[in-house]
Length: 294
Length: 294
View 1 (cartoon, rainbow over the protein chains, first blue to last red):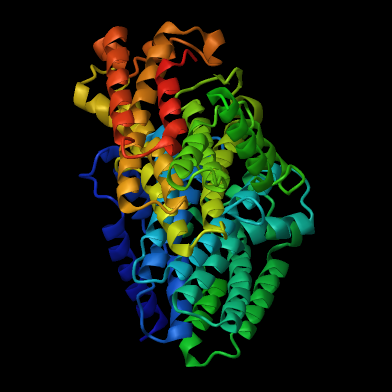
View 2: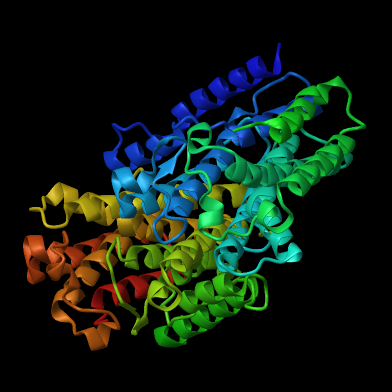
């Protein structure tokens, strides 16, 4: 199976699982479920669920079944996008080529839809009955730390907002990327590892892979915002520069940023050395993340 | 010990635990921790943690120790207040006699502070190492369902927003109260019960107590908004009527609302019949909730 086929298969499996786990529009109150579904089913690449599933595969082979924790990660990711896009935060009208949640459903509903997605993510992990209570708890711990304020996603988002329009320093930028993006991607990989019953050594190695893959992902994202077009990206290009965002290209330029991404890729791949062919997809995904053009 | 002394002692125990569990302002990024603490330590009555602790006491006697799950409940409650107060939702400038979070820290920080409190609530329950993994998971399930969209707090908030300015029907009003307020209060009582190792029968009875206490709480809240002054309440009085909110007094009048609250009180107390003196505080708290003037 080609990587593209693999990714497509994972995406449909995740989408089917999301379809089952997110309340139907027929559930009261309808509007909130519409708003949640609008943003969830908007053509996302499902990178975090796929990394979670590929990490489970690296540990346990092709057993599959890591869709439920993958869903939880996508729910958290989508909540963070909805809140980030709000007028008082990044004020984005478009996301993945469509109007953002608050443009369609209004600010109040977008705020509540984000809250609801985060809440549902936790419920999804807590109710995963095929997994031991201990493993479920460890996954919830991973997710809540990675999404929190101390070295987690919200902390990174705050630092990002506060850095806007100010001269950015290397250390600050590293903190922003590490917490805003890399923490949740690392958690995705670790959660897949826990789900599949990884040993401490495997968990550790996969965490290093996740961290560097996450850093590479964010650097490439920033580069694409500079060199890509809105059409390719499905969102407003050049937005970072317009908002004076702290980014890698702004600090080091595009070429040095690409080199830095390549360094993270090398470290991510290095962390997988003790894994055999079972980690093929993890290796391919990291490479794809760095070489993508959208 | 008088009830007032008991409540004061519970409040300090909860506050001390919150102080330990919420990241210090010295943690990066400082602003988000300031915003979280601003709203958390704003003189809240800590009703949900106290109900959680008193429920644990009803099951296991004066063993205490239910402060950590109590904290999780207060974190969720505070997140919901911060988001509810936002301009696009209830647009409240004052809460407990002080400026609301977004008036002090801005909308972006208030949205993120709410997100962070919800995330921290989950982390708090997941990391409660003195409790078995099974019990921790059950508490997380209770909390996430009670805070969610289907019969939970967010569902109630959405229905509340959508009912504004429209003629309200009894069934709709019941749904709003049940999900917006009663679900989390019932979860508080149930979580205390699970924490203390309640039997299925005890869990069931305490859930009924929690549900009716929660309904009574919301009805009295609505009544006080009509008959109280802003000074007594520490928030803008008459706000419900001004916003055309769906409330009990709006539908039935103040006297019938008081009667309805008394009925819920009777049912709450009835649910505790199989409990001995250990449920004294639960009984007193339900009575106090109905007879309070602020």
